[in-house]
Length: 396
Image (cartoon, rainbow, N blue to C red):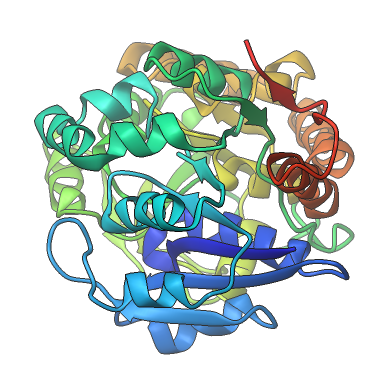
């Protein structure tokens, strides 16, 4: 089985980069051939190493749709039995539809939360135009749509799509837990709450900063908030101005080792990848994602894999985290976030640690890449006509 994956191939794609590269490496096994055709950028040379040993064909993309004259010839000569498209609304989505029409072979599409109501409303007129041009037809004609969770499957149905839907979550690579969080010794006594992800309005960071200024009471004084991630569209400057207007003491820090920070209650530490991200996750005590819209966020799974207790919104689409008491539920609104922060700050250290350990066990049991790759292979075989309907596929 020859699988061609279409995706962005650098970390500028955020969690999508880690999710798709990890899935592709897990799919690369006897009986399957996996190759990637993807949009490249200035991080291309460094980030292509993350896909090894899976071969990557990068192409330069231009314009608002990420168009390229190289993409369609690369697809045409790929020899693929099936194309798996990650993300929608861009030119590679259009190219996958054209490949399907020309070859009669199936396409599987993973929207990664891009059909959720908040995401569809964001820049709605642009998506209506792209939908009219090609996206809606491509979605309707795909052999199967991959949803990361049940709520995403419902959003796909609400969009009007009647295709088979495969509900398969993202996964995570488990770090060495013995030297992970809560065993880390650092020179300060203040505890750290981490946000790690794209600096974008949908992540609820403006609401988080407002809530942080409200929650600095007897417990909050013991904590500092660390915001790590790359700035998408200049949102970071607005957050800094907001923090100043609220009277918060904040700093911009390199935090290269994850060990030392100046005495502020709020730190913007920039993007962290690889060893720097690992050091950061080992140096913090809890994680927060106050997002308005997600598919299934890699950052939360990673936080749990490090044994961190999590504070998150239902829009993160991991209700099992609430069911297993591995997370505190908030809403993407300043008062609800502040309420959740106070609830978390009031917990004992032992209870906070126990919450993180429950998250670690959940990830170990249900969110590893080996199991996820097996389920995805079953979907590929089924759409190619070589197997029975997988348990993860719903037709209603």
